[in-house]
Length: 206
Image (cartoon, rainbow, N blue to C red; front, top):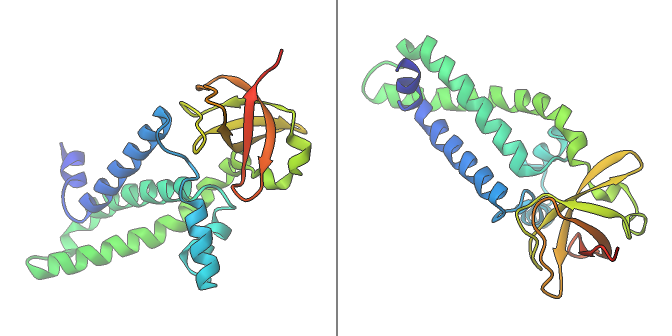
């Protein structure tokens, strides 16, 4: 009961709400209605337009290029855990009335600042699982077999894993001609769409 009370009380409840959003996102992703890299292109466009070294640049460097959705998920989870314990041991410092909310917001900020480098450290073992296909020539991957990891593959959505030179790479894939693919299906990388940063897949001919 004490744990739930802490999780559902300000200021920790803010991180609890964010954690719920993260969990819903990953549930939708597992079902196949969202994409792990769905925000990557938008962030790249914004970064190029602003030419700034802001938060998105810090995420790119600090998290070794893993998808921004994974980075944010780790930050939220770490912030939530830190906030739980900070709330438990330092709640008496929050005071009453307006000061409760002022110091509560400050606690949220401190927890977030502490969580970001911790999340970056946690992400390091995960980086090899999200190796970008850009490390290989697209022509080298064409013709290789891949395994679909999303619930479905359409002409606008889908991901698959491919083994290349002893490593596994997670690729954005698309299906054409109404071909149907579901999680676990084996397909062949047929064509690379450079501008869309994805591959067209087709059913194995054998």
